[in-house]
Length: 314
Image 1 (cartoon, helix red, strand yellow):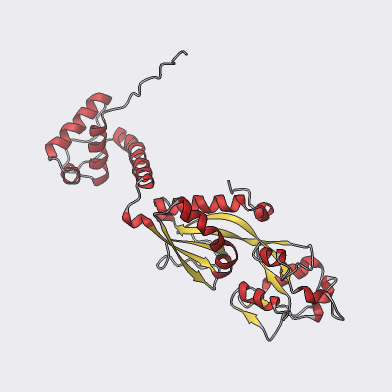
Image 2 (cartoon, one colour; image 1 turned 180 degrees about the horizontal axis):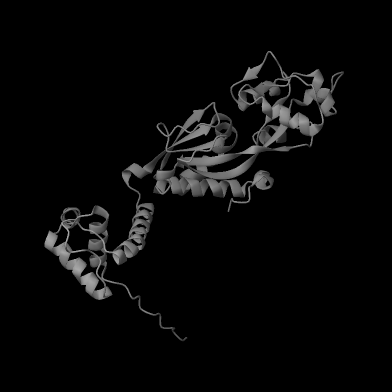
């Protein structure tokens, strides 16, 4: 077997790069020395050695602060990014105590009907991490004061948040099997006029969107029953109270068990997406990256979601 010689890396001394990065980031040789636990003269010596290795001048020597030269300003961002990546990946493989617990804000329907049955896999993969669920009955507002991240139906994207679209929201009516029989049996969308249309009071447009796609007009929603979550509307449908609207695969288990039925094949893609959300300045935290990656894997492995995946998942 022949061995191919691998070229040796042409890198400056790591100690010199560390001194340079600290001095440039902190704007002071003294502060860099304090951070690194060495003397100011040692920082200056390491920076000088780096300059001699590179054949360039990185700092102006005629100022009291650590002011970068033009070439230093070009070189520093690349070094800073490299150190950031090293720090992030080191934290990822060696979680700190603070990184062992993640609080996830999750819409209650998603938690009960999709996420909780899958969390055993996360526990198996990451036994040292704890996931705390903070369930919300409102599906679109991320509360960064109360949670590290969220799994929500985002309606109003925020420039301050990092958002990863997971799958489309798909509208589809669901009801008890007994509504498909008898004098008021549901056989076509027009038959919905004979039944209560159960809805979430903050999302009345769901039914409007679906009915428009089905070609049905002038159908009123129930004026006596409105809910603050899809799961409650779905539970009312289980009791035969009326027809509820689902917004994802969250009735699949009940349908497979025969407790509910989809009376129509028509499924309408909603304009909103189920999304993983966190503060933009927190997205590189190892615990958040770890959970996001696991969540994406779960979505991509769920066959019922394959038709709902947006192009940018993957």
